[in-house]
Image (cartoon, rainbow, N blue to C red; front, top):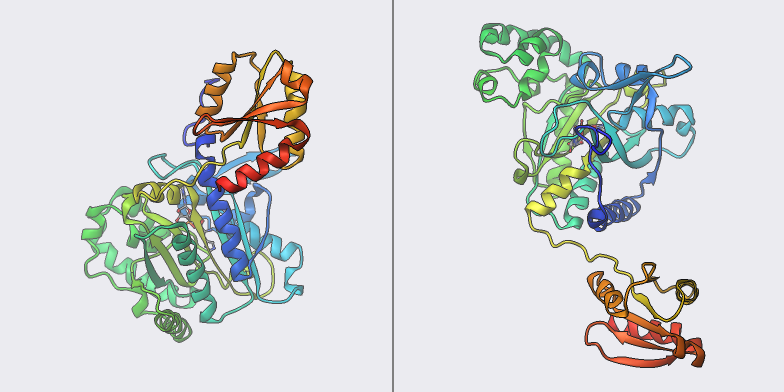
Length: 422
Ligand code: HAM
């Protein structure tokens, strides 16, 4: 137990760091390009925030939350998603007093107690955006475009966009009745989860992944045929905007999302390379969320991308791994103390050169082998005699050539060599 991570969690090891850093950099540059600002919220919140916003009968709230009582007897929950927290932060910090719409993005770990499998973890990471304060269908299009732009910038090629409208409480009420009427006939054939959903959350039956359930839905009434006038107009406007902007999409009338706060637009981006957990991005509009948690009537829309799934998709599509940021210089020592070598290493670092030195008292040969293994470009060979003369030998690790360099000019010499080698 002491040497194992909890089930559903994983370590992100140094060899994966370049991928994570690439993703983080693309998140930042894309959001900057679109005019979205970063927000960071706590990883835990009052449990009630999620039960109210995500919805009591959703799988997330009913089965998947990491909830605990703290020493002050507060009911807290590790955030299973980011939207509720960002909506809370928007209200609590009076962001509605700022220029609208407020366009935010976030990244960070989320926690859901679900059955772990490839692409599904108990601690996973999301990149999300949320926009508050505009009803315009063009915002729906912009948010979708941001997600697509991000995936393209990473070099992903095979992904597709599905959109739907999940209506609003006004059109969902009567639709729920029609759906239950249809499902009543099929109840005996539904899986146990869907049989449970029939009463409490029948819309979720629509996107059950089990083939047996899908087979029973051939003639199911569709919410898109029951939308109220306002929702229908909005859906038309969103599809129209996507058409005009040249965005390819498919309308999936059975797309319903697993969180209760959605109204009108719902969308997912799918990577076919991923198998069962193929959704790399999910989002939609939530025009009643701010009011649900006690604020004024302020519309919102956003999405979240599953970072681990995007990394899996990049690997499946054989997108070349980003170059690792290798150290540029290794100070190898012979007959010189590790502190003396560290002294020179620090001088190089102060001059802006990524550098390291030996702490294991290895032979010169073993030190060079280490530098080679780490892909270090230049070794500075520091011997007792050279140090006395105020010199060191610079070895090009690619071809083994060596050059004696005066120590005062060493950093400049290395910087010039590295620049040339770029
Ligand atoms: P979600 O569909 O629950 O939506 O999650 C968004 C994405 O997070 C999924 O498409 C998937 O890529 C990733 N994800 C979800 N659960 C896991 C898991 N257990 N392991 C790995 N990845 C996972 C939301 O969370 C909403 N807050 C999105 C949103 C923002 N809607 C509006 N604004």
